[in-house]
Every structure is written in C-alpha cells, then in structure tokens.
Image (cartoon, rainbow, N blue to C red; front, side, top):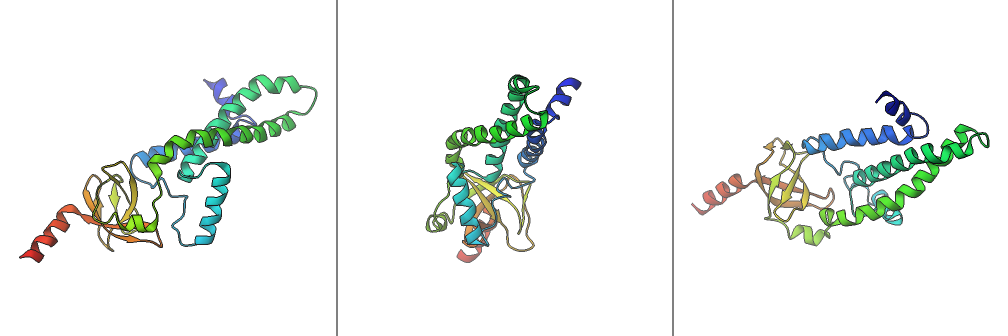
Length: 212
C-alpha cells in the first residue's frame, strides 16, 4: 500500500492524483447535500464571461454538464493515463531524456487523451443536466420538487422534480426549508437562473386562506 501511495504521489501522476482526490471529497460532500454541484458554473451575473466559458467547453465537447463533472472526468482519465504511461512508457526513455522532461510530456499527453474521452463519457450524462430556455423555465412555475440538499435558503439549495431534473432553488429572505421537503416553484429569476420556492404545505395553506 505504501509503495502504491508513493507511486501515485510521484511526478507526473501527482499532477492528477491531488486534483482527483479534491474532486472525490467534493462529490462526497455534494452527495450529502451540503454543496451545489453547479457551484463552478457561475450565477449568470456576467453574460459575456458565461458565454465565453460555455463556448470554450463546447469547443472541447464538454458542454451540457456541470463544470465539476467535466473536471472530474478529465482528472480521472488523466490519472489512469499518467499511471500507465509512467509504468510502461517512461522506462523506454531512460537515458534518452531526463525524468522531468518525460514527466512533462506524459502530463501533456494525458490531457490530450483525457479531454476527448471525458467528452465522450459526458454525452450520456447531458440528459440529466438539460438546460431549458428562459421561456421554458418560466413555464415550469408550479412544478412540485423534492429538496435534495440539507436545506434551502435564500442563497443556496437544489431540488429534484419527478422527471429527475435538478434545479437550483432559493427561498424568500429569512426562510429555511429542510431537506426532503416538497416544494413548489413559484418564480424564476432569469438573471441568476434560479427558482424561488415555498413548501407545498405553505402554498396550499395560502390558497385555502384566499378561498375563505
């Protein structure tokens, strides 16, 4: 085990080991509902920078999924390539070029191989992260969802609809909705690309009062 750890933390594999470990920790926290998986995708405040980022990902074939997913796939494939390359290819260049030069070449080749593989792997995942146009998102008002994060507050939260789609949701200022609650999308903030929600019971109570 010690030999394996020494190996994966040696250059050039370490260039992928550390980022991959960070992403593993991230996904554990995300599965616990404590962080938004789209945290690196921006809030939509700057359309120009968001458009540039989307165009860059699209050019790599990594559009349609959160940036965290794309990074994880690249690091995973890069790690595997670097591991195998150091074990089987690096020895072929012993005495020809320096170990550092060989390592740098492996890192570059790892990215060259990892990016298209990540793009191919991400395609089946896009159906889970479909992006609707603003008019379509507005039409989703009234949809009932289940809170998937530990809580929903005015600054953080996600909820999943019956069709499996996951939406970024927020409450009104000062309100907190616990995880697992049924919520209803009542408004859409086009600028921030988020939905405002209330609990289903709260909405039903409001309607009852209005009818009375």
